[in-house]
Image (cartoon, rainbow, N blue to C red; front, side, top):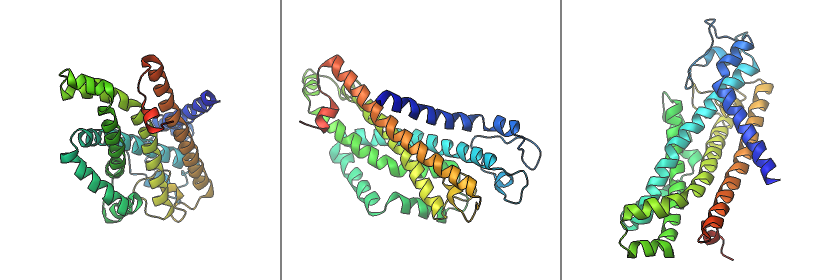
Length: 282
């Protein structure tokens, strides 16, 4: 049953990525072109007026969905590419040097706890005159990286007090050797889970902003299509909502399954410490 769920989740996410990559060809195949009579192009394109203008006779639900899928996939990739490395780096520094970086991480966690991400991103959308997809993704990545850094820092602290890490340090291993051989390899399952959680976070914030009408102007993500005042078409709105639900379920299925599978295989090979056992002591 778990393998079936993973296969379905991979199929759903792959179909969205392929639709984003080949959206130009799909638009041309369906006969939908922009006002200039040429196919659309550019993965990070944000000039979507011709496709999203309700008065344009060439506008179709398929064209809107393909553009929104391309923008949403790009937003997720930007958030992942910036958020995971940043969170991993800050978390590693806070775990190995708690006096220097741990306090800064604690203050950042307090700030994001006092001001939820939806409010921070909403303020950015309102205050930004020319919001871009990269800027939107960078804002989401910066906020999400705080939570990732907190988990990574806790994992690093737990790993450093294990017998194998203490033995390596007692034998004269340098801090870089301990990080590369004993800490970073054990971070992979955690980062896999954080990757799915980060993508779900980006989807959720985007959908919430679109629902309340605060989506960044000029971008056409799935969340922006939920703004019924800007996109009164019921078909497009329902299609975007279905895609958000399907992608969220697929990511929530794929992340934990991948983490548990890698952890169990590693524990079976080594017969030693597992981060899952540390997090869930019997």
